[in-house]
Length: 172
Image (cartoon, rainbow, N blue to C red; front, side, top):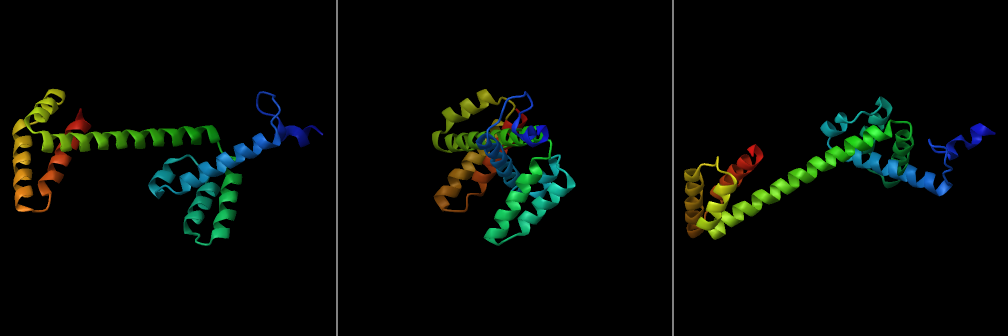
């Protein structure tokens, strides 16, 4: 009788309702599918069993809706036998890294736009925040951007300015 109820009890001895267990299983299934939607290089960085890794690779190849649903349920089932805490921790680290990269990208865009539209005041602010930056390089790019705009050329120097700002902020 004890074995039948073993799944209903949590690690700390508290009773888990069927609803709680289903919610936990659905959460693990969603996490497994989220991992499956990552590029293979990132999937390989997770500590997953070979069976789960194969199921994730199979999921990526499936096109039919019902087959995808069945495969996602299978991934959820396999996730329950994995070290879920370690996988969740890896997932959270990956998400934090992505958020950090997004924030940095937006910061670079803001600086580029400020430098292009505000001119010298923004340039002084940028050099104050990032003193290791070459003032001459920034000025050359800004002049070239102004010329591009008047001659309606492709924004080559705007992209170069973006890359310059990106490298400065990444090193900072």
